[in-house]
Image (cartoon, rainbow, N blue to C red; front, side, top):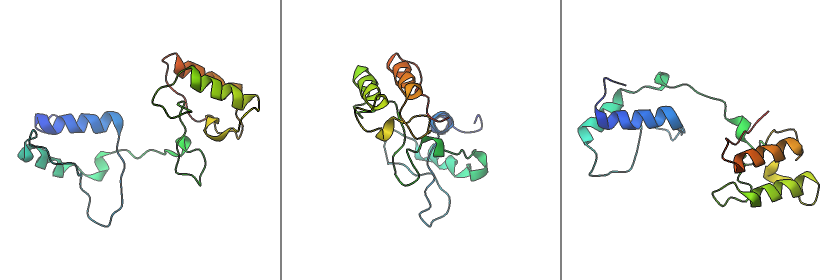
Length: 133
């Protein structure tokens, strides 16, 4: 990354930390973004030197609720942007059969159980949300 200008390095570090999605829209490989006058376009143009082999592909299927949904699993079971006691209550209800499991099966074993509940509890306490087996 050190060969790139500072503006481009910011984007490359974000890609390294957070990753990206690759879309097959029929055109050649490129990185796109929204125009903004605060960025130096000449510096950003150096990103043309980034090639697909500079990235590592990962299998993100572990995050899928199931293969036929476009949803990914998360400890934020009520989708309000935070993992808190409301999410823990949803996980408790699913684990004891008071409500359907839906997105609460975080380990992908087909049921909402104590493992899933513990993962939501941990996330509500500020720990990482563990998804997958």
